[in-house]
Image (tube, rainbow, N blue to C red; front, side, top):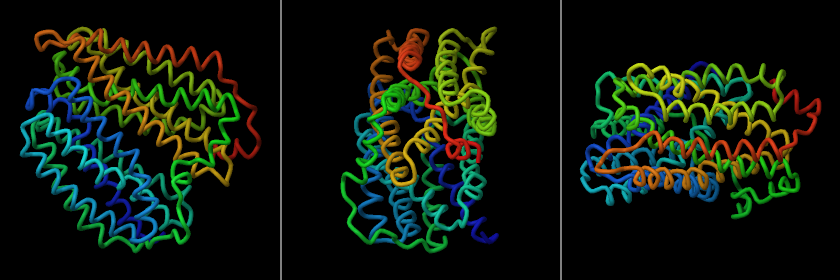
Length: 403
């Protein structure tokens, strides 16, 4: 890959996650403080993203991949998204906010796949080149959340204005990206997009257990994304956005440790370690405080790297090795649809309802709220320990994991 293309793709990935990180983790605090939203309304706002993630593969697979150059679709969607974000900044009603957020997410969700597709199609060796491009996205998320934290605007409409301006920049920049023409010439069916060919994997009982566990663990994940920021703020922690960015930093560290974990632990015990981390982090959230117990909050945040990498990234690798070359793309699409779509939709709605259940006179009982996802993670862990059996990996699978 020549230097010009690498720089273009790096800037694209940086802006993509700058747009996303500007609002995603802070939206709940904004809704609670500025729009006086209920927990259910906050949960619905986050569920809008999951709904969009369900529909995004159909848009990309049946329209974007067949008729238009990917960089032009990316530019158009970002400019459309900027317009919707501008409208969002004018809204003062939480119910109307949901519908505009849903419209915005429907324009934003496909861009996640598009930036990945544009990047990989410009690479002769994606396995070697993509990680160094993708890491710019994580760095962007860390940078923008720290900017928001230092400016103390996590509960202000400014978070959407930052995202809106970034969307305009990315939208215009996209038209200057290397040409990535449509690749699909044959028909693309509904069953292909949902990964129906990968249903053959369900013949393996352990894969079924892993699949169910992946959906269920997205429920605690949704609690974290939707409620961690307002919970830490209510507890009296200062500069919450800055401190929560440590979670993304830990993602990078534990991603680098994954090959070592595979060689020492194997798939099952890496996944178990991830589940144990989920339980621990929510217990720390439940019983931490901003005074003598603030160390618990720090541990809960830093454990994000273990929770995410040791379960979700390991799960992607496990799916890859089980699926094989012919259906691996459909298998990954099926997992994404089930987790980021179905699992996080359920989790976002449940997080909102649980928060309302433990709210009295506008005071939230965060201890009891956090113990719910901790309990769910315990159930998933027990199910996984009892029912999951790790097959002995082949030489090819070992090579895939350690490459």
